[in-house]
Figure 1 (cartoon, one colour):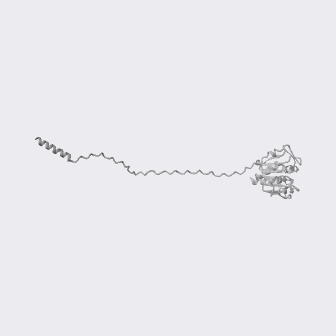
Figure 2 (cartoon, rainbow, N blue to C red):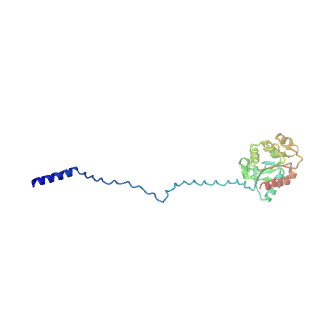
Length: 239
């Protein structure tokens, strides 16, 4: 009996030793998750909007000079010609212009025929831009302004600023010596054309009133009213 048990055990051990070994179970490998495509399209890059250029300001027109409605009359402190002052002044005031009187002195000025006029300001204080017209009154006393620096300055500034400029009797010589009559048609009191021609003017003293552009000259007292009217015509064209 003992032998039978031993044989059985031996056979069992042989069977266990030769049988296939159990394969160890491997741990399951987790596959990485793959993102599934979605139907939503990816956002498209937003293009930066170009800034709207600012509109350039519309060009503004330079306004035309506003008329001052003032006329400057320049008289000598002594021996200005009365009619050449009074008649143009009356015409200017009738047309609505204020008249300002300038002289080299603020003392009462006396005319050749006895008229007395109180000047408003000195030549040195004249600001040409304050006036629409500058008028040099004649008479023998006007010769004192032929070489006057302030009279020349006023004439030159008035022409440069395109103001109406007038001179009567011997006063056109002031304009010639100021250098503003070069190449201009002009007239003057008889016997003085040579003075204007030295300044480059084209002179004919037989013409009572001569206009060349904005410069008006006249040859003496008999045409003082026509002289004032010619200045008013030029002022009307300027306005």
